[in-house]
Image 1 (cartoon, rainbow, N blue to C red):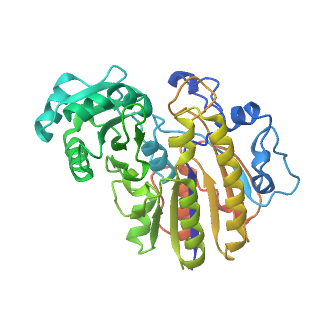
Image 2: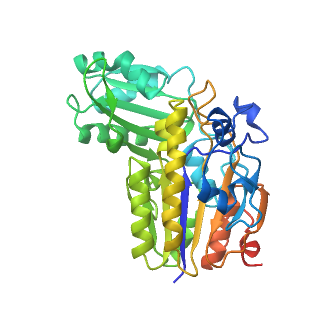
Length: 388
């Protein structure tokens, strides 16, 4: 009756990766810079687990007897998007980056998208999700043209007002884009971005967002578990990130909803993997450079984890980690190339120092070994350290 709760805190990086400068992210340090910006973090539960033992973090002490195993994971795949990060966490490294479009998409790509969907396109630039609505939202409401935009990441984003275009039509258009964007234009994700409101006060509908990812290019932890008949429960957008291959998920637009579903799973799930994506560190605060919001989110995370820990059963593993950084203190509003923290708690876990691991895939390999399924294509298990 083994259970693993893999909790991915989207965007919660912990210091620039060795190749951060190549991605334009020198100096990015999501947790470290946040702590300095707010005069120190007060996170008693995460501190007790060993967060301050990983590396110095203002306000978080390196406790002498941490309750969890602790360390850092270094990204080995090319890229810094959520799809790449989650795949690597599940044992699949991506050697080539997905294409990006800093100057917008080629005219022939948009022309084909319009032909397939019956609507024209406006925007076609790198932009923030809120900025593009201020710029193009009124025209979209007037004409019905799709707002198409991208970011520093490999994404084809389509925005539409819910009173102008139904959610069903938006989702169908994004599915058409996903089918169209193959070969040299195979972006990591197509994202449906519905919005509401009036000019000057447009707001994105986070609950209506849908991500259409490419299918994993090789076996993942989810595939290994499915082949062995081991249950998999998704919380948040994890199904989107794996093209729904061997995972179904309940979407959660807020961290609080994700925490609620995790508490329910801790009480009710008998065995298998519970795989959660906690979204707001990335989508609500990192992308908007919202330092106060990010700070409050960390305080609430600490409380939520404190509520979960007593619910762990004897053989459980509760794993906290991230998929990339998204530093709210830098001028960039995009993901950052960072190492990510890993904390592994369980009643029988030895609080070992896991060090700086060379790949996110070490985590997936460890979970695979824990469940006794065949090895994954990448990563070195640290399960032995948890049992030593």
